[in-house]
Length: 72
Image (cartoon, rainbow, N blue to C red; front, side, top):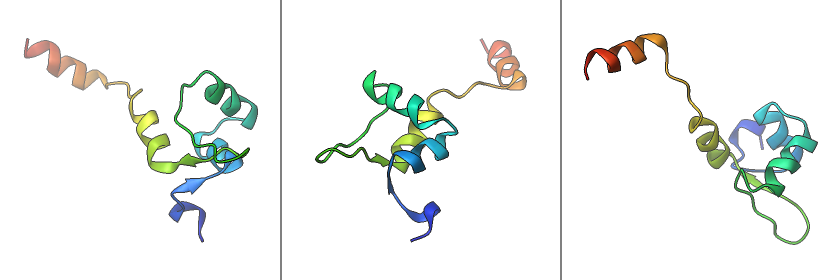
């Protein structure tokens, strides 16, 4: 299966997807900052949940902020 098509991914793929080192991914897991699955001893992640987590931290553009400010 091609990497982009897999919904469930392991630690290495998740770290690569997020652009972080596996050690930092483990830190995010241990502090429960990202959702994960742990059947037995391995960690797994849902790609869609990682994408949703990234989307939570979106920063608005200047034009979006200007629009909001003008419409208050």
